Image (cartoon, rainbow, N blue to C red; front, side):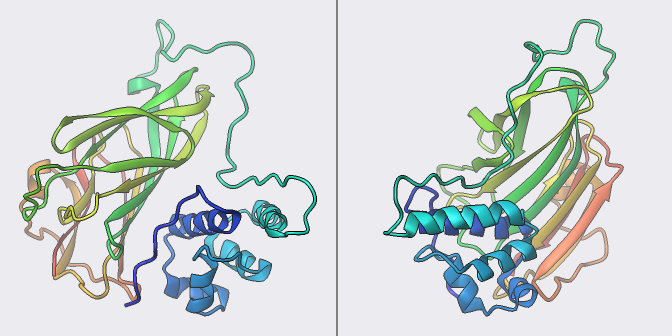
Length: 312
């Protein structure tokens, strides 16, 4: 197994900025380096260099990665050209760079919308919205566990401007540290309002949307959830819908150097069952990329759906 990637920051010179967003694109796709090598035809060293931040990769390598990860080829080509010009010592005048995310919504038109449902609203959905889908990529072969969640919500009345977010992060049995945390960030589709931690393992935030939604309008946003360094993660990842949630997809990439002893599916179980650590369904085996993928629909509010495993 190779060395872990050195973390990158978007606050840096153009080559570092470019590598940061190229790596974000790869992470969004859930694609391992092995799969990326097969898709692009380039070797791992070339791909590592492209996302290392020391120099800008060639246009050909960049566009191969973008195509493999399902990125926007037109915008990535423009971004590549802007960074190339910014790195050119012969360039004349200031260079404006437009990095991702590129999904900013225009200001709302037609007057001011209320954040609350109007009086007499016939909608039965809490908060004026429901969740159409949650697609989660959980990575366990990185220095700290990280989940990237792509969520799609549908507004059920006009003026929806904020969406409440809540996360439960139970302690691992081996975690005796005095502090217990979760790092949450928005990769696109809004911004986080200041959050709170009312209980040790419960975290509450609010997503502020780029612009108010109208009834029936869909909105996609992407979150990144990280367990703080040296904080062990409880051996499960479960979606417990507290409001209407139509679809949940989960892909867990385990560390190939330390594969789990057992993995099993949790489908519509009470919360207490999650902590029993006893397989109630057939065991699942990670694929050649050390991943296990499950999908759920028709979920019941208040019940758990996801994966549980026993550590190596």
